[in-house]
Image (cartoon, rainbow, N blue to C red; front, side, top):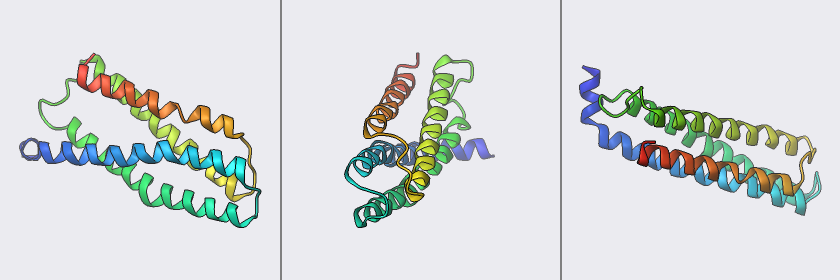
Length: 150
């Protein structure tokens, strides 16, 4: 039965979930910082602009997207592992809402990368600095939700 299989691989699933979260969070912290420097240090069409675009592309496509997908995959495996999640508990919904917000932030970053590709620096470095605080707040909520189970 699938629930027995999930229970048997629980520690593997949990480990892979934590690893993928670490990779995803690293990207969510770093990409907005790249945007700050991209906005403040370059002009569209310059060599430096192309270097930043290459770095942002590789970070998003090769690290962040696979890490986000893996985080969701292993997280859902944990949700369906018997005895791990009590759907009646508040912490589960707090974490779920925070993960959805983190996913929105990921998509927001991807949308703004398109702006750089088109040569439109729509937001200031200061705006990207402010947005860079969001994944930190969400991480705190998620960790407290899961560990403290509030």
